Structures are given as structure tokens and as C-alpha cells.
Length: 110
Length: 400
Image 1 (cartoon, each protein chain N blue to C red):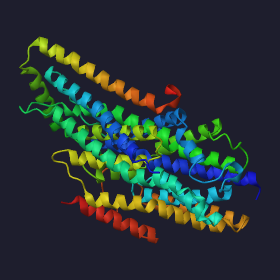
Image 2 (cartoon, chains in turn red, yellow):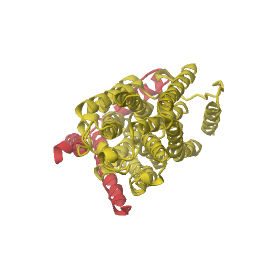
Image 3 (cartoon, chains in turn purple, blue):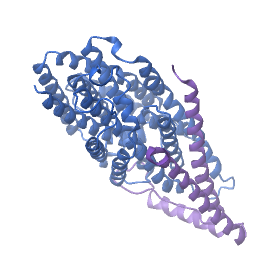
Image 4 (cartoon, helix red, strand yellow):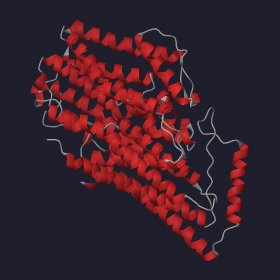
């Protein structure tokens, strides 16, 4: 028999897993931006890369990020909490990934 | 031909299939991080290779589905012989190499299952030798549903990633930080690929050893040396990198931004993990493609090139039947005895040499990651003519 219920189970489990990992990481980035430490990771350069930023674009974006840091409306206390919160969320997101690895290895949970 | 010689030949062919599986599927994990510039191509494929190697040792759950499930019969009475495994592998390798040449991210697992099914049916002259319940429930239906599931999950998590980082005041949103996350999410995909796909070849070799009475029938798990050689074969293949397919997945379907890439990889990993946990032998490739499409739909200004997507879907539909037909033909040749077996090996060698020669004529390497129409490929065979229409239309689809 084809077990339709288990397909629904897969959908729900996959949706929950992805939502939690992506949600935590995205919230972490948001808090990092609130704390004034806006991350800027330019694309790596290699021959004929698909995503390419010109040095001018990188410079512009770096400037925009620095500006956002200078004109931060939040008090130092809030910024500190946001920064700690951001790293806590990144850690949590990483722990969920480790949980995924744990699930992958039958040796660990059987 | 002595049984030992056949077994050795089949193992060599199985390992070659494992190698093609590796380079066919490098794209699943590494197309999106390469596309967004999260990783350079070489380090990306090296990372994927190492994680595939590690992954292959972590679990043997999928291998046992193959060595004890799809084909009816128990142990020495199993409906498959070493010669039929050989025929099935020729079918799987042929289709895997052709789709790689065309840059189509098709499922290596379906090629393998198709080849084995075709060979078994023709070899035993018994349509009933295949367990169709297992085929439908564990392979065909998951094949249709898994890319849809992955697509839905990727769509929703892409929306979520953008919503959570959106800043109405126009300040820098820090979305480029997703590039950093992509290194980890794509690694998880590569690792889960190792635990899934390396198993399939291990399962075939184990099936072979059981059918040749070299392994007790009750013991369906792969032996340690089988695990070792399969892990090495898939890792080597992954490192070689299927650049043609990386290009299709990373650029051909939709333009991938870091937030989207991260969401797509997380969805791919989550879907693979959830379903292999429930025992479905699904295709990593189809899940990854579904995720990329879903994430393209989830981004506000994202566009999906449906022409390319349609062609990929057509490739998926053809994979199992075509591999089965080739497997069936080689199996009917194998029925001729030793001469037939030698003829099959010659066919495999010719296919491998021809495909690699066509590839060498118009090589796609790490340095060719930008999209280019490949229409000037000289047409030698019908296969090439098809490849041409494929790249032509893909190129047309890219022009608005």
C-alpha cells in the first residue's frame, strides 16, 4: 500500500526543519543589523563567476553599511542585547543543523 | 567466463557508476553557493567531496533497501544474476553520462533503478520479477512528490528569510550575511548526499555478492571493503565536478541570491533528512532542483525560466524508462552467454569513450561557470542533435 500519510509527515517535518533553521538565521541577521554590526559578505571572486560585484559596488555597499552603523537609533544597551541575541540565534540555528546530522547517523540514535 | 571474473567486472562497472553519480550530483549541494559567490568552485567541490566521503560511512540504511526489497526472491533464489546486474549498470551509466553531457540534473538513482529493472525483466522473461508495490510506493510516487515538497518548503522559507530581514526604512539589511550561512547549509546537503547516494552502489554490489553466493543471504548489510571503495568512488566523482549541471542549476533555472540560496539548501537538506528517515529512496537531484525553483518563486523579483524547468522535468520522466530500455537491451545481449557479456562491456566502453570525447571537444570546467550558448558543438550523433536543441532553447529562454 502507498502510505500517503507518511508523505504528509515528510512535508510537515521538512517544512518545520527548514523554517526553524532559516528563521533563526534570518532573525539573527536582523538582530545583528539592529546592533549596528550589519554584516556585509561580498561574493568571492573567480573567473567568470555568476554573481559579480564591481569594486565600486563593494565600496558603495561598505559605505552604506558603515553609515547604518553610525546612525543607529538604538541605545547602547539595546544594541548589546541585540548583538548577544543574534549570536545566540546563530548558535541555535547551528545546533539544529547538528541535530540534522544526528538524525542522519543511525548509529547515534538507535 | 568464470563467475569470479564476472563479479570483478561488475564491481568495476558499479564503481564507475558511483563515480558518475558523484560528478553528476556535485551540483545538488554546490550549485547555489557557487552561484551566489559564497564559495569558490574548487574549494566548493573539494568540500562536497570530503563530506560525501564522510557521509558514505555514516549510514547504510538505504543500501539495504536495494539489496533486499525491489527485486523479488531471497538469497540464492533471487531473480537477478551477476550478468543482469552488469546489463543494468550499462543502462544506468549510459543515461547518466548522456544527461550530464546535456547538463540535465537527472536522478542517478532512477537511472540505476531503471537499468536494473529493465535488465531483470528481460533477463528473467518475467514481468512479475519486480515488486511493483515497492517500485510505485518507494520510487515513482516519491519521485513526483519530493520535488514538489522541496519546492513548497523552499518557497515558504525564502519568503520567511526575506520577510525577517526586510527593513522598511531602507537601511542596509545585511542579507549578504546569508552567504556565510550557505557554507554550512550546502555542507549539510553534501553530507546527506553521501549518506544517500553512495549507499545505492553499495546496495548493488551487495546484491551482486549475494546473487553470486559470495555473501550469506541473510546478511543484507554491505561489507566494510564495499563501503570503503564506494565512498572513495563517489568522493572522487564529486571532486571532478559536473560543471555542466552546476551551471544549469546555479544559473539556468533562476538567478540565485544569498538569502534564497540559503533557504533552498536548508529545504533540500530538510526534505532529504525527513524522507530518508522514513525510508524513501528519493532522488537528491530532484529535491535540489525543486528547492531552487521554489526559492526562485519565493523571491519578490525572482523569475523562473520555465523552459529550462520543463526540459529538466522531461529528463526526469525519461530517466527510468530509458535506462530500463538500455538495461533490457544489454540484458538480452547478455543472454547470449560469454560473447554477449563481452559485447555488453564493449558497448559500455564505447559509450564512455564517445561521451568523454564529445565533452573534451567542448569542455566545461570550473573556469566556465558563466552561461554560454553551446550551440556550436559539432553534431556527430543523434544524441548530440538533441543536446543542441536543448542548449539552444535554454539560451533563448534566457533572453527576455
